[in-house]
Structure formats: structure tokens, C-alpha cells
Length: 130
Image 1: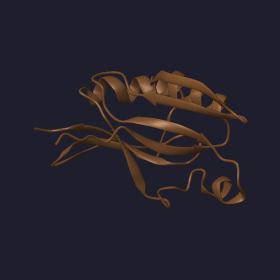
Image 2: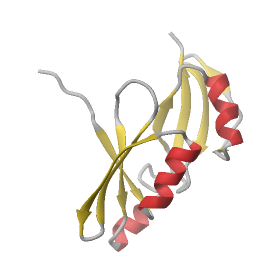
Image 3: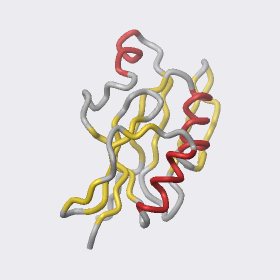
């Protein structure tokens, strides 16, 4: 049996603002944007590089969903963006306006710095070692 994680749903306030952030600031690729009717869209953004898990952007509609925007990780880092060159990407992302919450650090597992997306979700930018 072969399985892989294809998408992770991320609640967003609005499709177009989320697409703009993930493509213009993080440099992700818009791989799907299909109208599903009734105001819903199937929107997927993926980091550049080999095929992997993408973010399925879901516009929050209900009050519960709206409260969940930016809170899916309950204040913890819960998304991890791997890079093959931390010291190339860190300054490039800063220059595009990405807000880092700490200075870069080296851990036994790699070079890392925590950043926030436009909704306050915490991510690690991480170049794994080994």
C-alpha cells in the first residue's frame, strides 16, 4: 500500500487575500483554483519544489470557522516549511515582508526560525540537518 498526505486544510478569512500572501510573500505556487458553486472554491497552494503536501485554503463561513482562523495550532508552531538553504530563504522572505518572531537559531535537527502568516498561524522555516 502507498499513501501520502496530500493536503492540509487551512482556514482563511478570504480566498484572494490568502492566495496573495502565500504566493507573493511565501513564494508558493497556486496549483488549483476552481469554483465549486455557492461561493466556495477549491484552492490549493504548494511550496516550490518536489510534489508534496499542499495547503487547501478554506474560506471561513460559520462563526466557529471564523474564530478558528489563525488558531488552528492553538498558538503553537504547527506548520513546517522545509528549505534546502535556510540562509538564502530567510533574508528573501524578510525582504518580502514576512514577520519572523525570533532570530534564527541552530538546533541539533537544523537551522530554524519561527514566523507568522497573515492570520497569526505559527510556522517553522527549517533547513533540516542530515
